Length: 633
Ligand code: RUQ
Ligand code: CUA
Ligand code: CA
Image (spheres, helix red, strand yellow):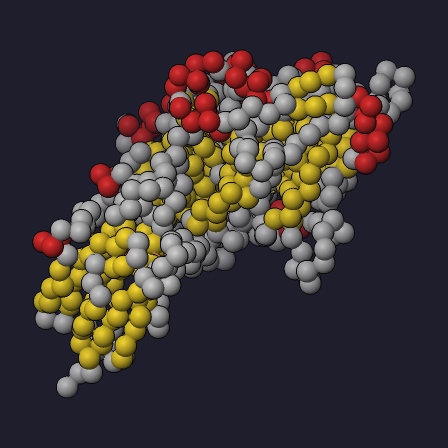
């Protein structure tokens, strides 16, 4: 053993204040990472490393990194991964890559009763009534360019929505339907303080999309939508003619960047790939706010829409609202470096990444003069992450590799040079996003990197023609040894992006605070528990606990509309109950101190056993009461 390294110790040194700030931090056990030099040779070949080259051009062996988290120990990081068209968010621990939880967002999900109780059902109904969504970009709120652990926001690429997840409860608590979007793709907040949540509209449509201009694509457009985080409200849109794809924020509260792959304003693949260049679109947020303030907008679908198109009079003066920077054809990801200096766009159809110096946008007349570098990374560059030590890591979809390159070297090198490339590492296979720990903040941790591969091919036991994705964990903390692949993790389709957040930045509740809930707490006191009839509506309030519901029998009439409100009065963490009613599609989760309400129609006479679906005690199966539905006369 030649060297010892502990990621936990590292975070402790950097943030001693965290120990005082957050009692959770103290609960995270210390783990030592052993890097055994003796094992280095074996690991190098095991990892299939194609490339860290030393000065003589010889391949170096990667070091051995232990990413295991033994039973009973906790991870150093949370990773929040999007579930793609599963519509949810998955929570992993890093580095174990154990899936700890799923958070349903745009999907109805029975294990957590999401979409079944009246509140979550109405939230889904009131945001369009869709039964699915396509989550891509989960982003955690920041204060001073650091994760504050308050909220997670995520887009719905399927139906043009944004959702907010409350990280106190790991639950979706608000969804906004963006009326001028069809397909909200990129998602991010305005940094440093998450003042706006941005949803980036990908698919160009007529605005409003009410039957006008059906076959006149030149009239279509896209918008960038801005929402306030809390309360979660839609504030304004900016309209552009091109499409918009991925997005990321500068660190100074001024610029927000998106890519556009359809500057052609085409509708077919060949039209959308016709031009040699497309855009990075840079939105000047204070200028847009001024325009909104001055009433310089049209209201469309109830939303102030500011004209940010290239010919807009608002873009005429010395300080345009929106700047259009030419980049090689059909770019995809754009991400801002942890120091806030550069926005880096990945070329997708072009083998380069383009480096834009953000400060320059306030200086130059021609926004193309803000382009300070272009590095040739390889085929199909999609997304770029950072280690905080001056390196960028870009996924190469076509080459099935991750390429590590030096950002300053790329600024110094000639445009299109390969020289800044340090290392290329195979991944398995066809990577989309990659995410380094806290790389979306100014506090990039530089230890773990997750690569989200679209194809897994031969990496797991076969499960039929629908393959899992492959989320690969890399250790990137040792620049001498190079990137090291440490884990393959199968993923249900299909994660796109993620945020990796130091565990001590979150402070989740383990039981509900009844004051946080809209519905009143129902105690076991007699006066709290009642069955009330008003015409053919029956309202029931009852508590529940191990091992019974507040009423042993509830009798209603065939055709009654029945509302049951129930509180799980347990104070002990991890003791959940539920209220499930067979043949009535009723399935409400009740965590400790939680109150929920559900409404259904008792449309068939008979006996129905209301039961608890969480295994809550040895008498869990006996935790059941009867719903007696009397036949109508
Ligand atoms: S975008 S990799 Cu939303 Cu790249 Cu999926
Ligand atoms: Cu309560 Cu099972
Ligand atoms: Ca194009």
